[in-house]
Image (cartoon, rainbow, N blue to C red):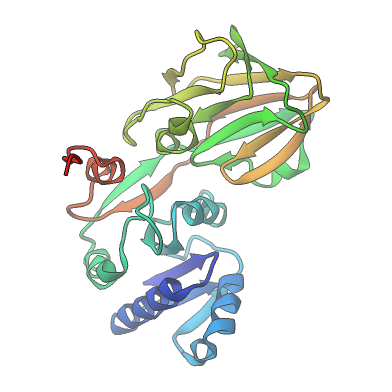
Length: 294
C-alpha cells in the first residue's frame, strides 16, 4: 500500500504518532511518503527520522496513493484536502490534541486502526464539498476553490455590519444585515456554523445550511437547503472590501464582486473504522447523555 502522511505541527504527541505509524506500516511492507515540509519539521526535532530507509517525501499527491493519514486535529484534515483534491484518496486522522469530529484516532489506537485499514475492515464516508467562483475572478480563490467545512463572507477593517444579498437558484431570499454569513456542509455544521447557532447535520444528509453571523434582525435564522442549490451572494457595506474564507484559507474581495457557491462535482472520502460512528463522536464531543451533576 502506498501511504501519504501529512501534518502541520510538531510536538511530543506528533513525534510519537509518526514513530508508531512507521512501525505499523513497516510490518506490512508498505511504502510511506511524508509531506516534504512536515518531514523537514519532524527531522529538525528528531534527526534520526531521516535515516529510516522506508521513508520518502512528497510535495504533490496523485492517484497512485491509496491512503492519506493526517496527524494533528480537524484543521489538519481541512488543510490535507488541498493535496487530495479529486483523486479520491481516502483520509484518516490521528488526533494529537483534543477529540475532533474528523480526526478521531487516539495515539493508543494507531496500531489497531491500521490493522483494520490493511484488512479493509472499514467504511467510507463520502463528504460533500463546496465550490466557489467569483465575478470577476479572484486569483487566490481560483488556485483551490473548494471547501470541506464551510464558505463564509465576513466584514473586514470595520466594526460595522455588512449586508449580504442572498439568492438561491437565482431567486431572491433575503439580505442579511450581520457580521457575515456562513454556508456550511454537513461536515462543517459542527464547526463555525454550530458556534453561531446553526444546527448539527449528519454527514450522510444531502443538505447545506446558511447561518448568519451575529445578525441584526433576530428573525434571521439558520436555513437548511438542498445541497444542489446554487447560492449567489453580493456584499455591501461601509468598507469597499470584505473577507471570504474557504475553511482556513482567506481572500479579500471587493464589494463589486459576486460570489457563486455550488456543491463541488467530487467528494472527499473519510475512513470510518469499526465501532466508530458520527453519533458516537457527537455524543462524546458534546457530552450528551452524561450526568454532570456530580
